[in-house]
Amino acid sequence: MKLLEEKIRREGRILHGSVLKVSSFLNHQMDPELIMQLGDEFARRFANDQVSKILTIESSGIALALAAGVALRVPVVFAKKHRSSNVFGEVYQTTVHSYTHDTDYNIVVESEFLRSGDRILLVDDFLANGKALEGLLELVQQAGAEVVGAGIAIEKGFQEGGSLLRQKGLRIESLAIVEKMEGSDIFFRNT
Image 1 (tube, rainbow, N blue to C red):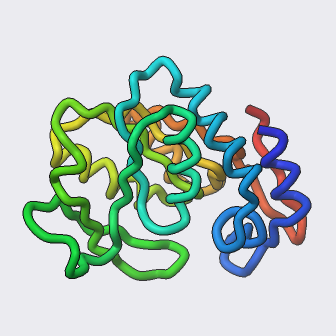
Image 2 (image 1 turned 120 degrees about the vertical axis):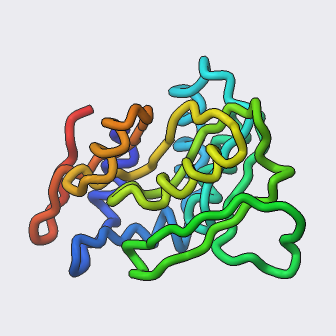
């Protein structure tokens, strides 16, 4: 998606450790018009998949998932990174390693929000090593639901997550795939 690629080129910053900082428009401060356009694009790409719910992980994926949920007119569920006092009863849970924060999270979703028969679209801001998506896939499997695919804003194509998940049969629609980052230059895969 050229609009997103241009925004990344203008405002993205490359940090140590192959970190792409897009805090000015995607995951700290948000550009609402851009977020809604990304949601519309996810909806366009998954329009024929009979999505019944969208699942993401807190917190950076929530805005994108909500925008896609508005466009697809389906509920949005987000996995919480901690089981808080307002999460009770039966839950689906698994452990996810965060590359950015270099820590493990026990993510949870109350079982009433994911059901057998649901057709789930996974949505997230980044795909690098694929651990967040693997965790979300595990939650959907525990629920006996079906994943129709994953909508990703920015994929780091030079890291293995996307390739490994595609090899396992997951349909991934990434709106921008970063092929490499050198100095202050960001290069995108032609999609």
